[in-house]
Image (cartoon, rainbow, N blue to C red; front, side, top):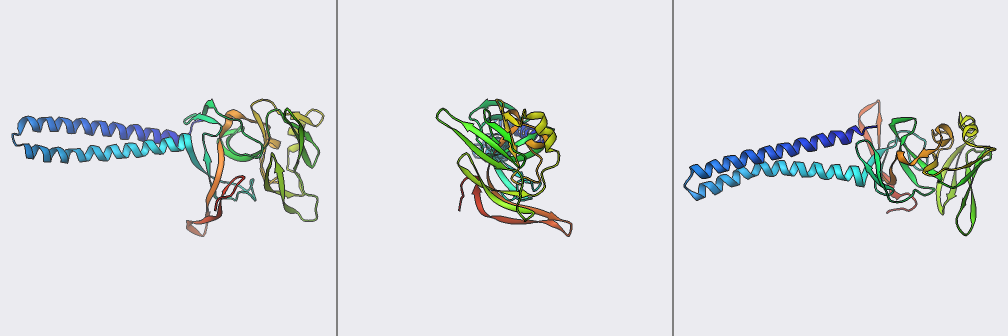
Amino acid sequence: MTDYFALFMLIILFGSGAYWLFIYIEQSNSLINSLMESTECSSVVAEEELLNQEPKKAKLIFQVILMALILRSFIIAPYQIPSQSMSPSLDVGDIVLATKFNYGLIEPLWNIPLINFAEPNASDIVIFRNPENLREVFIKRIVATAGDIIVYKKDHLLVRRCNEYECKDTAIRLQNHDKSNIKDVVESNNFNSYTIRLSKQQLDGTKNIFNDMFINNKLTVPKNTYFVLGDNRGNSSDSRVWGLLPRSALLGKALFKTVNVKTSDSSWWPSISLSENIRLFGYNFL
């Protein structure tokens, strides 16, 4: 899937670079002609300074666009939350900044992985292309990584994670059994704690995918794949609906949320509010 915004910026970059080169050549030729025709040194110097102004402007435009393209493609990029699937951690309209280099370098136009640096961890919030529709960008939380064993227990998942010293089981809740229809609870996974939202209703369509992926209600996550869930467990299209997330679909890791931007039918101007705190997922700023 082509990143059309990156493609647009690349076209503008080449256009501004070509304009800069064209102006530079034109001004250089004009200056050479002036030197050949003029005998007064002062007038030539004044004309040279005047002619240098236009190439400097074109050069500045080229440099700004180049830096913006590098920044967005390889370092950090903004994403807006389109749905309630990550509530209460992220609300609709939140602008999230995501780092593009945590897990490796990605070719910006077609999002092809170039170099892998590190493996994502359980509890990371990741940005990725929807495996079912590459035009869509999703944001979810990783709950299990390669090698983890997931056991389906109807209203929760049991994730067993082993290292060379021990194995540890983590309960990942899917459904609320309290009197309240919706309940926010704290969940811990891989030494990180975060708040999830549970509802009484199980997510539609999960039985089919569980039957396809799980053998005797058990699944070992294959290499280079991840099991992801939305924090709003009753309202999220995630691995329970479309299966495991391949590493090749990853775009970056959510770093922090900045502002919330919402539009309404009653006003043409969007409502913009600053986040209560600049939250680094797993830590807090301010």
